[in-house]
Length: 149
Image 1 (cartoon, rainbow, N blue to C red):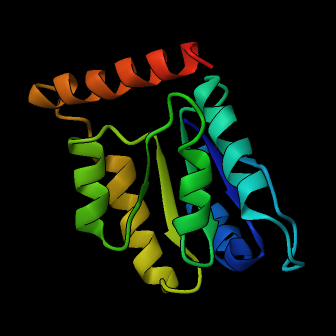
Image 2 (cartoon, rainbow, N blue to C red):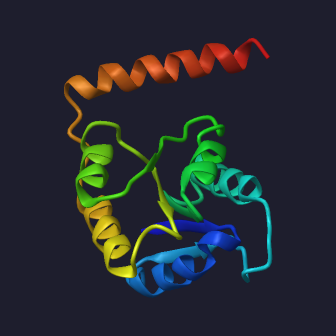
């Protein structure tokens, strides 16, 4: 499976660790390449576009808190980026929301916590069923909102 991976400077160290966890997948490292200050928005949007285009199946993004980069990724049409602080959030984001991107806070998670979240997120399937109706409402709104601009 191809996974887009991106971070700002606050998430750089965790992003580099995540690459070592994803050895069985093809990882597209979209940057950043150091702890030099950069804008999370650039990397969240870039990763979102790669996932939305189908170039990658999933995306994982990291900034200091995970908040900013998740907001940026969610501006891309078709992206459902979930900021997860624990494996339970990760599981539910996949089961109920069919999240196609995962956001993590590099300054708030240990490597072990991040690893447990990622493993849970990648191994949890979407339940479908009643959740499809809810996601379709979001997609319908997204379509009508983009059409009017």
